[in-house]
Length: 260
Image (cartoon, rainbow, N blue to C red; front, side, top):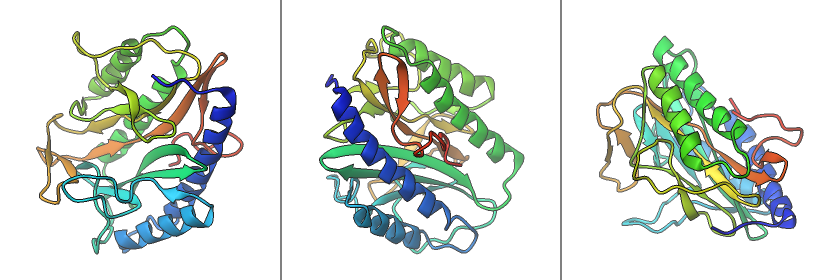
């Protein structure tokens, strides 16, 4: 567990502001007819113009991740690769973006409705965003993460949805992935930790409309709901201070917790 100083957190806030701005720019392209690779191109241009580096591009795997943005549609949970695919009316599209600025990382995701979506998809978006907001509101020094994870899980399951258990959030700092892992669900044998000031977490509930099970697509990156039902993903980078949580990837005046 790598705790950050107040000065470190201020540096991470600058990375978070660039990421927030990038998300706002990307959101202007969310409409039927948009090609997902065009969103990714604009995202990378915006990050570079702001003096940052796209955090996800080149991440090692069986195939290095080829883009600045993870763009996942409908039943895809995370890690979708931008391509010639076109957004269509009624789709859900998740944009997960990371930046590195002056050696510090920030990570945030939001799922959008493309045009009008059905009632189930709309409810899924609302509940997943509420899971993130609820988790952030409960961050306090001395609280064990397992208590917050249980509340995320209950909120999702009471709405008739399920929490993906094969994927978790993470601490973040100079590296994108730092310990500890930050699950969105509770089990009695889960790794647990006590929240401490200086801890910076990428909290990212991933909620499926159907069952929790997922599969990895042949591209080695895209993770999708096994049953083909919709999924949603919201994420913020959040620092815990003595006074409570500080969302690092919201807007300059605190706007945009959900960025939707």
